[in-house]
Image 1 (cartoon, rainbow, N blue to C red):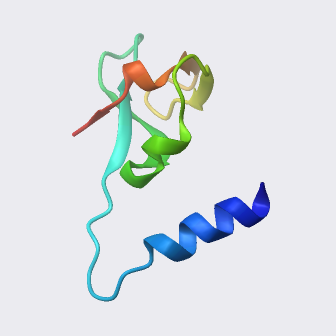
Image 2 (image 1 turned 90 degrees about the horizontal axis):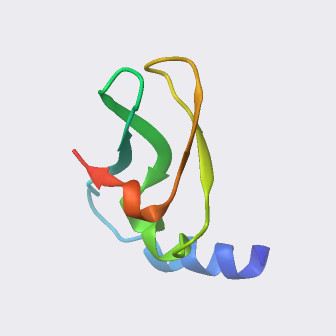
Length: 73
């Protein structure tokens, strides 16, 4: 698994500037955007049905989310 991840990271390294887009969810408590800790290029690694937790900086709680909940701001 670590070898596959290293290969993906190496394959994603391109010369020049790179725009990093963060994946966000909507905080159900504050109603504002909360960072999931993932970047846009990580989407293929997140499959349907996997529930993840985000330590929400907006309200201080942990929120469960899936890939269906994510958006790019």
